[in-house]
Image (tube, rainbow, N blue to C red; front, side, top):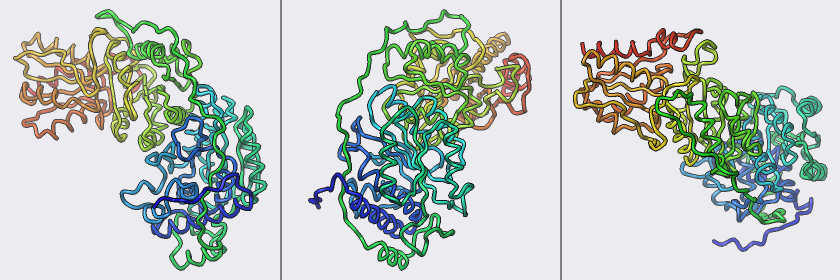
Length: 625
């Protein structure tokens, strides 16, 4: 049925009070109907959201894609009953969907919000991520879009114990993000009991101020005070604002107000009935707050004069990390939405080449890997093409953010350098030996591992247009150029570098071990053993067709060598593909880093861990024997 109600606009504070009550009632109704959810966590923040949505959030609810809209992010994602109740109040969803869809199979009103809903920018629910993501959105607004939209974030007090929250405030202050406002719902109670600081707003304030934020403390149920605080925060300036709101969990229903034991529990039906009576019953308000007073798209400046596509002479030694820097600089000149970030190692990842050429599109995240990923996610919300780089090993610190980026359907490009024992003397703390496994495990991810300059350039360009989370693994040392700039490297492909009708074994490598496979093939050729060599540059998706053809041609004899732990890397990708195909027979030797490595020269370490050319040749002889 078409909704013929006329929305109330320019709400008075009396009308806001009614909206607050409706948000509480609908949070209870929806969670009780679903039999699960977080009504009490929603009720504590209902006044904050009612004032925000009714009087301050500039948003055209009929055009969620509008570039000029403010952004609203629920870092406190478990308060989804409140968010969905807001959507009902503004007419974005109907009451029937709220009551029959919340937390149900197949519904878009999931337990924690995701961008399946057009008004949701990022998936939240893993606490401590909404504010860091918002930093990326705010960076885009101030420095790239140059539009005056604000980014409002509802945070819970429990998540203020997460280090990522403080990384976010640190970077927001560094970049002078006056367009970012964090509303902290300080309701004192976490999942199992009181939070670390309880209602000690002064302690929260000292911490936030020490990170450079402007802090406003309010009674989170005093509507005029909230209104004044939001007005002051929304005025902008050159510092992020943190509004600390002292609230009561379960506010509005005396039987659960400030009581432990109600976190994440829907009210039983009979309690819900009493709660609705105490809150004055159901309401059916339709409200619209302010809409943007401006309507224009961000002005996208054309890219600077493009540098020529990087080219390398056949046999020229080049590190793939250097080729990545060359490729990124080249891409920046032909793709004006490409942006880059790094974690204070840009002179090693070679992202500094982009930073020097396009400083207005480069953001330094210093040693804050969680914020690195979150900023990339936030920039992707604003339709930029972010490339984020650091050492491969350090992405492990941000893995939850990478996992959540996939749930957010974000398109981000990650580049990990200094991977494997090949890095040499720095030792095991710096050796990314699990990165391929963790990136392959991300939903819908793309995992790439080039072996020379031209393949790196081609795959970097492929990533720019690739949706989802993509990862490029680069190496520290220089290795001979194998390909020309005319060679193509489609994602999901592989290159057969050596092939004859007499091949009796297939050697598979990527990156540094591809060069070891080629050396092993030369050694075996001197013994009249013909070996096929495959460059498995696309680890996910993998080229199953090429693998099957090679295995068929070589009697199922395969040797995989990888500079990675045995779990989840090249060997797993090959075995998964071939086993799923039903190929028989399959006789596979898998060489990987199985012991804890130490320091040493690259060639010493490759030999010591058993992935060098000599070990590959030895594995072939064992298969043939």
